[in-house]
Length: 391
Image (tube, rainbow, N blue to C red; front, top):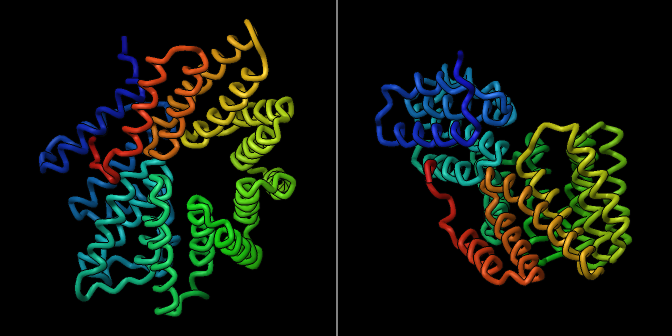
């Protein structure tokens, strides 16, 4: 009888061991161990490819690294005229590091991405290494990882530095998409610092840039972002208008993930307005939509977090057995969110989730469990940022 395939958690542990071995120079059996890993989980399959490509990059076997990386992300998105043979070893390494970092972001491996972008930027600081397009990609990639860790002021610095490189090298027209992405990132970072005026300004600029490209998908994303900015300003009607515009584009483009994101956003708006029946309906729409999309741990985690918030709000509006049942439901939904978010490196969101779970335990008169969750929230928020591969 053939052995059953390891569960994703077992594969994750195996990948950590392989990373550690490679970091310490014990590389003899790395490829054999990678070949032995089998899973039906699409995201874990991508992670195995990612680690294999990283191994080849460490060994400076560029052809093999290219073969694996190109299945996960198109290198032309970094630099469309890149040709390995015309560059030095340092330049190649910088290019492959930013390539790996971008893939790590797409896999929600934000700490790993941060390390890769940091190493890339260190190389780009060396003499006779002049790759402005790679530097721009690394800077705003690093900024994105800062946002997921709650380091929004640092993210703004990286985004602004990327804009300076664009201006210095006169690349605004050549890198129109990157230029728009930087403005989108600045809008999100300023939103999370509470500077909503700057957030709205950069968001509107990004919107016009994506319209001019044209790129309906990113227009859809910016409308969602503008909706979140309005929501945080308490402009609920404006927020709903932006989010519904984003939802319309998501339906038109058949973007399942964006449909789910917008249903979640509308649930948040209706929750803030205390229109709990409508909030619950949007949560139901989000859950139904998620069934038709590939599992994305970050997006699913955020969806469950909002669904849990709605269940908790409904519990506070009732009494007796119904309230107790809804509190149990909220906690069960938050557990689903935790299961998803712990498979990412989104520290800021995971910290918020533990705080939400603590509030529910307090309402259930379970102070010890509440305290444990508050401690977890604190531990996640203060953990070293950009930790090593295998921690």
